[in-house]
Image 1 (cartoon, rainbow, N blue to C red):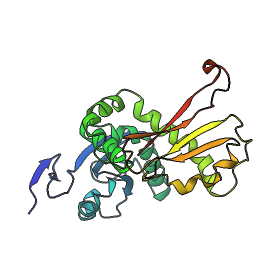
Image 2: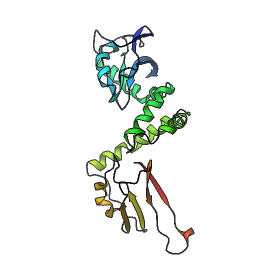
Image 3: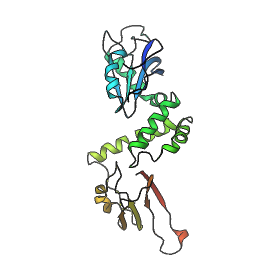
Image 4: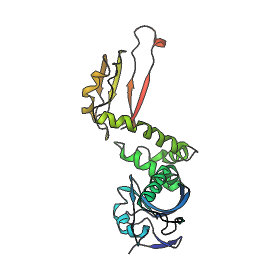
Length: 247
């Protein structure tokens, strides 16, 4: 039987047998305070209880999915340890609360050093060919993302790109003129996110492209996709652009 701790009056599972520890947080959102239970690492999964329930209804599920998701089980307003409404508070009101709560993602991820480290390490390890490539610098990455605004800045970057990504997936993205400068691009053959097969349409974006695959023996922690206009006269006349991908 797993060890049981007491924290904020709730049962909290220790990290044991591959099951992540359970954290209890208080998050301010939409003008109210919300009690949130959180565990795991990976893509976020919001768990919503019903009546007569509170976050604890989800504890068995959280045990089983903590190795695949960041699980967020909030007490809805009026339940558990979250704020209480002054009057009737229905589904539309709860939905607005939860949307506001998710807007507070930087606060959820950066609530503790452990939670920030777990979140960042998940992506560095799962988006890398060699999962241990960043282990010796994970504390430096954690220090960086705990600096004020750094988590929020990263989330803002992805949110800003969301509409364009949807247009691209729907085939509605505007056609841009091809880059005409001679370009050198090197692609790792073992990238877990961006397979080499995806290079088949790069000719539409680069009219003068030197494309090659990194050998399987190349084991860079971060493989460089070098988009480099090649100098035809003086080296100072050419600009180099490097794009990092985790390899």
